[in-house]
Length: 204
Image (cartoon, rainbow, N blue to C red; front, side):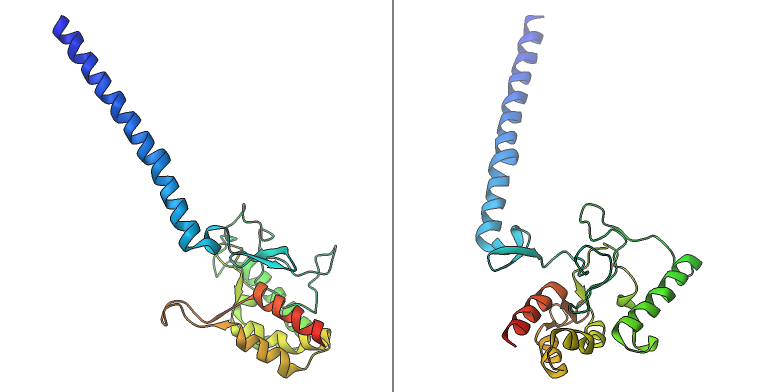
């Protein structure tokens, strides 16, 4: 009986020591090490890729946002617009609409959106790319295709008192290629493009 109690005590003490060691290693030291490496080597990404303008946070390069007229749900013609979002670009409510490509509701929504985008940008509906009328899987995609940026150039130029050539050059400068040369598609970060647009417009 005494041996059984002693063995149980030793096992319990060994288990407690292991718990304490693993708690320190995996609950304290490992998180501190990962955080330290992240801050040292990937400071921008580790802190949300926040972009600042005039010392103020303008948004994150990783999260899309609306570019509407102040106090309204209408798009502001002086800014490049991002992909539509069924979550209102809320990073806490990400996710797609879960409607299949053949769902009549989605087809109706896309047709209506294509008509609106075409009218807003003064282009035929055939020129409206898919990302202009469909949300991403996350609903907070910060990028658009070069094709979507291109159909917005004339409207943005006119609204900001710039030439089409100036704005098109800006788009070209902010068009990123495929990751590692083969993954994904060429894309334009809307936040970075609009910040550059703001700076260009301020000079004119």
